[in-house]
Image (cartoon, rainbow, N blue to C red; front, side, top):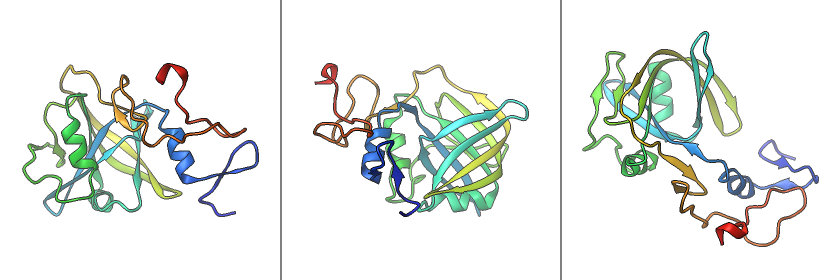
Amino acid sequence: MSSDSAISDGGEVVTPAEFRAAMADFASGVTVVTGLDAGDPVGFACQAFASVSLEPPLVVFCADHRSRSWPRIRRSGRFCVNVLGEHQTSLCERFGSSQGRKFDGAEWSLTRWGTPALPDVLMRVHADVNQVHPAGDHDLVVGRVLAVERIAEHRPMIFFRGGFGLGTAATATRRSGPPRQGVLSTRPTTSEA
């Protein structure tokens, strides 16, 4: 079996599509990780972000190996995590796309830490790249926090079941049919139907 496969408790291989659909049931906040490379702003949308330690202050995010922005941020050694509010869907879509230059026409400012800051976000975490751990098709990036800025009092952007918010979750990525034993069901429950 390849390292790209996962095994359910029933001994069956969980496919990437099944795993993605199951993980869609985990609601998460949404961030944009930004950096500056050779004077050019770069960034990408990121759901996999969390605090790791209070002493010393550390955060972690996951970056896809296929990302064009992550290698540039890694090379610079410093990043800013911009935590999005629910009103910033278009900003999330811009930075979540692999098309075009993400900062073209976007409002941003350069922080005193040398990273791009996006306006009207809930908060920003400024950090240096401290450690990078390869993990499957992603890197786990641990950052040493330099400063935090609490910017605005908004409701957070939540990504859940392929959509933004908790009220109207998208179901396009959900697997239909009865659940297999040992595999998490991705069928809508009665309350969702």
